[in-house]
Length: 451
Image 1: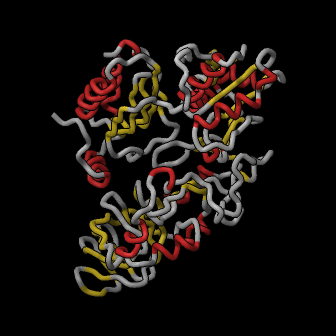
Image 2: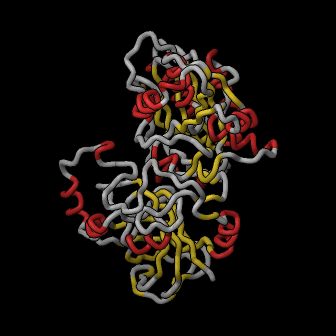
């Protein structure tokens, strides 16, 4: 009986592409008393693996928290697997604003102490005694009330690219840091203010609303379904968005655009930008905001030190990583002295620019043509191998290499080998190789940029 994922991300991406089926990215959560989280976890894995459902899921005695990718034609069957449990009957599934078949490439279900780490050790705290849920229209109306305090219960790298107008945005790296900070700041407003809170999908502010009621706050409210559900409702009902910018998401997309406002800036040059990326140095992997110009100049690195590192022989890079602490000690979230324009918790009062999202996408769709796929990467020599499946590729052509882990990388072909020998132009069916400073994966596609 299979109880764990057995395929790599690259292998799974290839299977998804070959199947050619649309998938839905969604999220949900439920607080409940689960007696045996391990048994519950194994039951879910068996049921979801059979449906080719993928994602990152945490289960604990206090409930379940899930972000998933499900085949569209299995959506109802997936819902049935949830309905089999009483506490998940009628559960709301937050479907992503933007869809991507590669949003998740593994099915990972982990048993945790809590589904949302809160740092609390208080047996009298009842997480089910939550605040009043508000729909989008009600939430907007309460935002207009001068007696309202609105708090963003997400992390600094999330609120930096998008937030509700007038929200308190704590400079924190995780949820448990925000609870004591906000509690201390709002001690004088327990009786007379409306405490309004929100997060991405509702799970964090659900626990936060219960916590602040436990702390004695009288008027506690939360955005039902978080920013994801709010966005769906304002689109359906034609309501003006009070959320500005991007909604950060925890899959490879790293963000869904809600409005055209760009409220953040490139952490390296200060240019208006809200595109998160991870440093190309595997020993760093810092999450930060980087514009296209800096991405090209810095080769997707956060600092000159990391830029120098990625050009070292692979064996030397591995040696440098030995002994480094793992987890958040290495995979930091946007805080580094090398980032001159990072301003945690200091969001501008006005948007820095407008994003022309739709027009940009239309232009890209016209300019790039799929011509092949990645087959191998020789890490020692930094040589990538592709199979040409369509059109021709010549020296001097500009190409885009795109994939769920690689992201979007643009390069110009200056030297190329086809079927083992040097060539000027490769044709359909040719196996080509050329030097690349970054690793490619089996799920990566090769596009030719046609101006």
